[in-house]
Image (tube, rainbow, N blue to C red; front, side):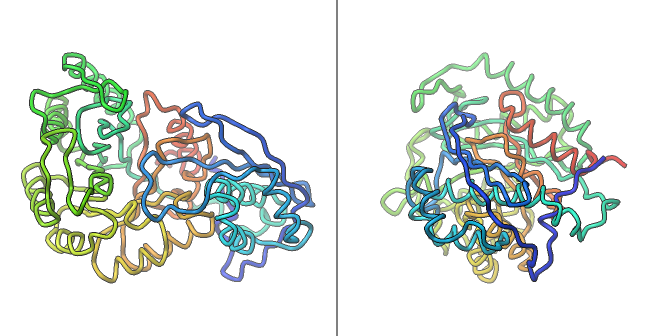
Length: 411
């Protein structure tokens, strides 16, 4: 039976109120075995919610907001500011947290927002306020499957590339078929990479193709699909994270062919790649403020969707502005990047109102939180990025919850 996440369906007046009785905290491990803070919020009615924040390895220029503050100090500030024992809703609490981001740190802010959300979801008052009928099932999203990893943080199927991720995007949403395909794809990839030479990038061993060129990664993946007769089942997606390549007003391919490209040259490079290899999804092809290049590439495309990750930083107003100026076709939505639960929901609404496609996405350093699965199912978002399933169990946790939420795409 599908589990419903009621709090995301409260109405616009947001009248559902809760009183915080206590806030506790503890240290837990994230997926990189680093310690991070987890908060536990308890309401007066006994409802309890926990929250911890994921973390990105490549941080965009808009992801600011102070360092990780001492949780004890955070508790003291919240208490001093009078946010215990008073009626609060998610929006009110999140607005307060956003004002305190420089004091609390952005990871702590999202963790606190998420713990409030999870407590609200267990409150009897919220449970009685479902707007969505339990009989309605959302459709299962199409998966964007992480296959090869490059850049400075390549761990799973690591390859020499200037770009951090190469993905296959399923054209259908048959989860059982996709998982079977994924296993075949991963086996084929690993088998072929075993034969490649290894070099070290940022203290990580990576596989090197015969030619130090990003095109070699693309051709490798196309060959995998051809060998498995899956050409008609998946499209190619590249996460360029080009803000990381931008130095002294140019883009540097420092890991492969050592070339230096101007904005116009990189735009031409992407046009050639898209045309030659039929790339259908391209994420962060330019630096966040290289607006002219974003506009030129997006306007030139009818078959490749240009997507803003760090470019939008999951911010509602930035999404609206970018859509109006036709800088991109879609949004990579990362809830913690938005800052709070409320801000993430506002970003979704902004994308929808401005005809931007949405791909929800994990972060590279994660916890076992399933909030991403909840908003993907609740808002019937068509795509979700999933980490490498055979090595990243946090992705399995999110995928399992997504199947619970949607019925796994089956009636």
